[in-house]
Image (cartoon, rainbow, N blue to C red):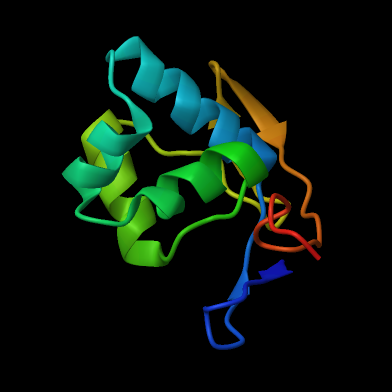
Length: 103
């Protein structure tokens, strides 16, 4: 879980596998991060944080991503997730929401 600045103390899951899978699906469709953010009706940083840092967005955004891509993204929490046709255990990591931010 990651505690995000600007999220009023909301704990957020981190799942790098989900970010990588999201980027792969987006690129397969020829979309930019801005295109995907527009389809989600969310700010660009939601897509950037997911793809770069594995910071999972809120449940409704995850549901929208699953609908847009037609398949579920991997999830953290140690649940089995379907990635590239095989079940994978996805580890949970703890860290800042935006590792690109200056200290």
